[in-house]
Every structure is written in structure tokens, then in C-alpha cells.
Image (tube, protein in one colour):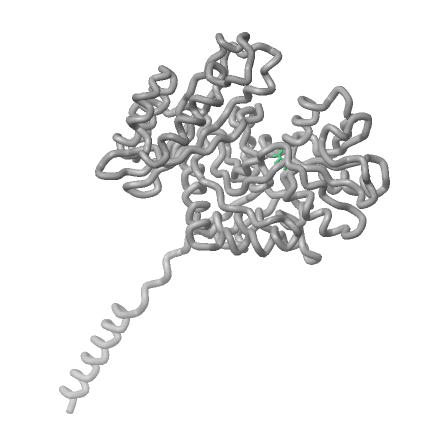
Length: 406
Ligand code: GLU
């Protein structure tokens, strides 16, 4: 009996020991959840505004939340920070925000200061006027009138550069302040991107209307701190997934079409690089792809159109030939002899490979020796080209041109 008891005790002891071994180990202390601070606008209905209870909402906000999710950050761990037009570069480079999704156009000037992923939306500058206005249908009609826009915006730059002599420009911190001035009659028009103006027109039906005459192309990018190429690539990948899985189209329709914009089409997304592609770089790309993109720009710089043509898909060769050889100073028959010495140079500024057989590249075309009188005619161009690998060979199969505002 004693023996039995003892072995029962031993058995019980063993059980305790084995229970102790089986017990779930104490959970290791979790690392704090990842957090992000994201710069957005607070007053652009449709793109980025706040609900009555202070929650951000709109297309830019949904884009930011999607990107954050792909970076492993849940919406409740995002801190939203207002990024007015004039503040965006400073907020990024001081590290106050991790990235900016705030109707932020990719421009050559800004690429000196920050890096961009994108574009994720293409808008265009337009005019917002009072419903009763009959004299303003296009920017040329602003002569002698007062137009309001936000300081630090491309919209202000465009008016200063192209219309400054005859237009009175009034700048404010935000577009909402301009809209208040338009309603009160202090200014005659508000100018910025059509997608932003549509949101304000929708908020003031019967009082304000968008003229509907786009006069620039604004490619919205996600701004990151200058040179943070790792984050830039992660965001580019996130935007491409957002487009591919249908989220982009759904949120565009829900936020932008409902404010009166025509449906947008998704742009080709790339790392908008702030420096030319270095030789042999980047290592993640198919080396043949890098070689071909360089050959495309080299043949065009050498005006070797036969060589260029050999790198182009047969079905698009004629169309591309025509763009390249017609709209350049030496070939444009509508221009006078004084442009004969003008020329251009192309530099590859970015390559993104989406899968083994498709890629996108951007090359920047800068015109040289252009006589002053033709300067406005020859703006720099960013070409976005799609490359496809067929039978093992990369070919340029389509090309889109975008004028670049300095
Ligand atoms: N997209 C233009 C810009 O980045 C105008 C809109 C804005 O100010 O955010 O300057």
C-alpha cells in the first residue's frame, strides 16, 4: 500500500513536472506595433478631408492606408499630420512625417529635394469660378482678374511663370481659404488641380463651378525623404498592387467620381528616381533590360534611328518613329530655320521590372540650344515606355510623353 502510494506520489510528481514542461511558455514581450506618421491635406473633399468626428477620408487617405497596410502598419497606428502645399518638403526632410500623400505633383524641381514613388493619379490644373461668372473659360481669360491658389503649389508656379504679367495672383496657405475668398467675392477664380476643384464645387452646388479646361498635367506621387530608395520601392510596389487588385479603381470611383470628376485611368507606376540610372545598377533588374534601356537612349541621342527601330516592337515601330522624329527641333517642319541648331538629349531616369517579361522605364528628354522665342514650345519631356520581353529579347512596345514643368 505504502509502495503504491509512493509510486502514485512519484507519478503525481512526474505529472507536475511534465505539466510544467508542457505549460505554454510565457509570451515573449511583443515589439511595439509599427507606427507611421503620414502627411496629408485636411481640406480637400474627395481627396483628403476629415469627417465630423475628425477621421481622415478620401482617395489620398485610402491610398495612404493601403500603403501603410502593405508596410505592416494598421490604420490605428497611423498618426495623420497636416501637410500643406508649402510644407511638404520640410516635413519629409526633417523626419516629421514618414511619407506624404497629399496631391503632391512629381516635378523636376521637387525631385532635387525629395524622392517620389508613383505616379498614382494624373490630374490637371483648372479653374474654379462663381456659378454666375461668364468671362472666365480658360487661363488667358484671367487677364486683369485676381486668381487665388495655395503658396508652394505647382498651380502658383504655373500662374507666375505663364500668366504673371496680367494676372493678379493671391496666394493663401490652403485652397479652402481661397474658396472662401471666391465665395465672398474677394477673388475672381481659384486655380489648382481639377480633382481638388471638383470636390469644392460639389460642396457648394449652385454657387461654384469648375471651368473644365485642363492646362497642365499633374502626376501625383507619394513623397519620401530624399534618397530613401528602399521606402520609395516599397511604396511603388504597394501602389502597383493597389491598382492590380482592383482597390485603386474602387476607391477612385467611391471618392472622386462621386465629387463630379470623370473616371480616371490608373497611371503606369514607377520609382520616380531623382538621379540617373548608374552603370550596372540596380542589381535587382534583368541586366539585359538595363542594357536595352540604355541602348534606347543612346541610339536616340546619336540620332541612330535604324538602331532605335531595332529595339522597338514591330507593331508600334511606325508610331514611335513618328513621335521621336517629328516632335524634335530638327524635324518639326512647322518651325523656322533658327531652330536648326537646337537639339535634345535623353537620360534614363528609372526602370521598374514588374515580372520577368514586362518592365517600365522613364527617360528624360531635355532640349538644348533652343532659341528664346521657342522656349515655351520645347519643354522637357518625361517619356514612360513599356518594355516587353519576347523570345528572350526586350523591346519597347509603347511610349507616352509627359511635359515636365520645371
Ligand atoms: N498638385 C499640385 C501641387 O503639388 C497642386 C495641388 C497641391 O498644392 O497640393 O503643387
